Length: 137
Image (tube, rainbow, N blue to C red):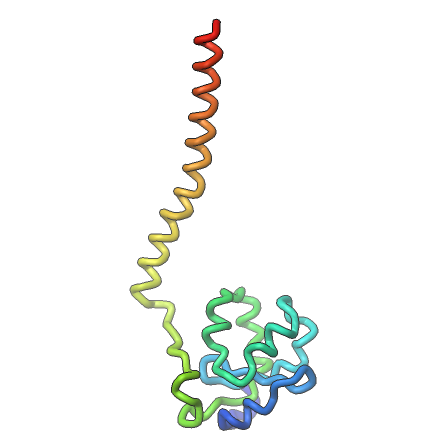
């Protein structure tokens, strides 16, 4: 982080155009103006996250490790939490959350079912075809 400056929410909120774009993610302020053209999702995605705590948006997308490693170079300081409106805050979930383990287990079953159901349907169709040919003979 460059300088470690503290910014108010209102100050960060003013930087909401293509040529001057700041985001708040997990309590830190990022000047992403130089990254606007490089962002894989386009600059509209970044602009949609201005004027609020964009932590939820950032986490929900599921950014890659390389994207997370790029963040420090754009960090210009922190937002004063006392100035962030309560309805715009987001509780940043830690990676050690018990809900995450439950979600991972549920996700594994969903993936298994997505693979198993088409295979079972194909097997059933082939069996019915073979049975139909055998009965016709």
